[in-house]
Image (cartoon, rainbow, N blue to C red; front, side, top):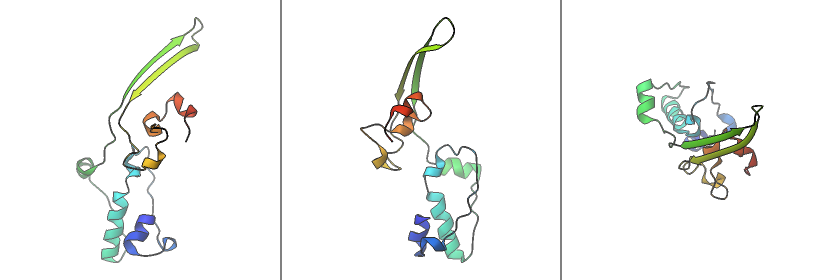
Length: 123
């Protein structure tokens, strides 16, 4: 909403965004460029708009996450219970361009999202 307020000059309580819920999103929701596009178009036309990108446009102009490599090794006892776990991650930062202040002690927890070690990291 803040980006809409910046573009229009309207107070935040006068801006309403109709959010379409979708599964996953693959990190795309962290980049608000599509919100700015909708607000600029709505302001120019003087009425609400619905912005839809074709799959081709989405892929052409998308903001892709950096690649990552995970190496996982685990040990099981005779009963099949987990007794050891090693998980090594190599990845460039995802938060560097979204919100660098969230990187704590050099660790970008987004790169570890979903891993068991996430519970041990300060957020």
